[in-house]
Length: 281
Length: 291
Image 1 (cartoon, rainbow over the protein chains, first blue to last red):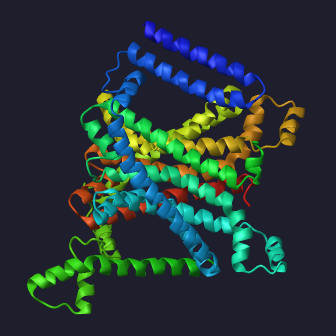
Image 2 (tube, rainbow over the protein chains, first blue to last red; image 1 turned 60 degrees about the horizontal axis):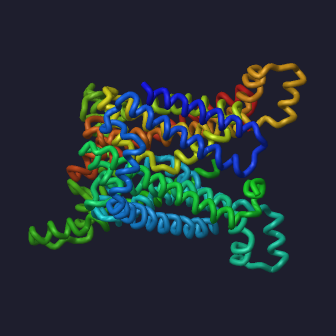
Image 3 (cartoon, rainbow over the protein chains, first blue to last red; image 1 turned 45 degrees about the vertical axis):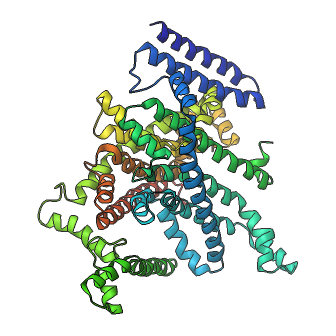
């Protein structure tokens, strides 16, 4: 009962401080502090509810318990992280996005191909590509190569569509200006069209980050060596050790946010001229 | 219409690549078999064999087509459209959890978006978490959600729908926040000069002007929701649904079954997204917003 009361107090208190903060003019500090405070409030309420309602740790472990497990099994978590995130997701991400980028530039030279490929690519991007996972696991074996292959297939089409769209961003006036400078195809591509396409390319890259991690983890459900985040999650669910599952989720969340944040930072540095970036100086 | 020829060309190229890939990937198995039988395969025989194996590495399109017909059309012809062997039954299972998750996700997304637009505290504290929630590979915890909800006594459709919901609410929130904020200051001022109440300016200005954004995000949400339903079916012990067919096929090496389930899933996705597109066209036309 006391725990539940604490939970209610934590919720009300956190919300009150946040609404106080929201009433002030928006500064960098409040913009950063208020989501953090909200997150902490949710964790506190979670802790209180688990203790207050006596929820079995098999169903929902308390945050403190997850933290203890996390600290105790860093070796396993690191091994899984290397297997899934670095070997599977990251290598597939680089290959898939790189291939899509190059093919987009090649396709861009042929308007005929572009008109045919864009609708098909848009269609394929909406399909449940993740279903390819069992097939690719069959083709490339259980180790990280098959996971990288799944990631390649998953990130390829969103990236392709975004890059092709981005390359069409320049208007006739700008291209004419390049021509008056006597710039050839490659020069125009490098100095005008690629920079103009960057917001789109980064949009594709950002979408691809989340897809990459999902692809690598889900592919492990279809067969994997005895390490990897997906493997650990599915076996730990079987053993009902939910605290390890949650620790694995924390790793996945950290990896996903870090990955996304990294790409977003690069985007900020590369497309500093774009209105959406200039606004938030 | 002028896009038809290029699209058909690309699709034809995909089929050619597919057939060629089937030859390349299945050739070694065909050669092995021929060697054991002690016969030399001519090129024509080799190609014919690679396109008609029982468990090929990559089944040829016509094999997949035949399997799909066998499990849908032929089943219907025999009046057993909803038998457990029919893909229509499995698609229906997947579709029902997709649809339920989609509806739940849309409702949650719109509610959150309204809260974010009208409440500054929510805007500042919840919005960043909505974005952060999607950098977490949520599909990864799909098995856990299903096991936990089963343990609590919730089973069947709802756990799968929860995963679909989690995946589909995000595009709706982002799109609706953008859409509800799309009326400019001038239009909002105009509402004020007409002495419109908050609810009036919501129903008559903000909501209508958010419709184009809503439909665009609904299409994404539907595709995401289908992915969620399929992945949600993986850990349920392969009972029913397209995801279960995928898993079953991968356990027993039934590649043709995997591919037919995959094509069915793709068809389902195309149908559902197309349906929303149609509703979008009709609605926007009636509202006078169609371009």
